[in-house]
Length: 285
Image (cartoon, rainbow, N blue to C red):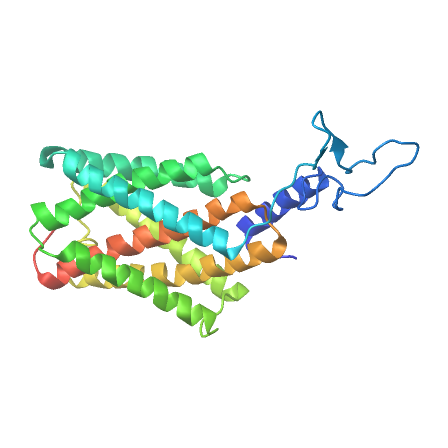
């Protein structure tokens, strides 16, 4: 099955190479490995070979990815991120919050780009990303809740984030919003533009230039609202990628890549909601 998504195209090509190399769901030949004979008493390629115990050993097999696999991996990554966030909140002192925040953000950015552009799924890197993002989320949350004094803002942001996520899942399931090629290209382009703007704003801030993009003002509020809308719509792309990946028969381990995409969107959405809530409560961050 063809897809217009470049990432899925690469993953699909990787899956095809694996199947061609002989590691499909049914073994090296793509056929069941039992009960086949090559003649002259020799086992056919893909047959079950006898072992020292006298029982046949099945050929290597790779189970295709399912929706349940993605759900389990996503919950696992969220759990790791949550534990890491709580640990960072309690272990890292207030005086080191800023350094840990920036450090985790930079490391997470690099690691996220590596995972995004890799052609194979690497569970270890995805788990490491979840740990780093946990530190980042923990430090940002601690800053808003304890240091800046926005009492209860973290719980509000968590509830709002998952509320939006489940709403988008319902809208996608009901086909209210569909990931058409035009929609996909538009969201990806806007996300790239927002990322570039935020990166430029961050660099300018390091040199003491305040653009007002992240301040409690009209510009800051509008920018946060735009980011929240785009982050929410990015889940539609995630859901579509998962469905297409399942239909394409991607190997099970690619469920880690799908779960990674959902985690990225959830963290981004949470941070933007947290910031918007701080604006609505008043005061600068």
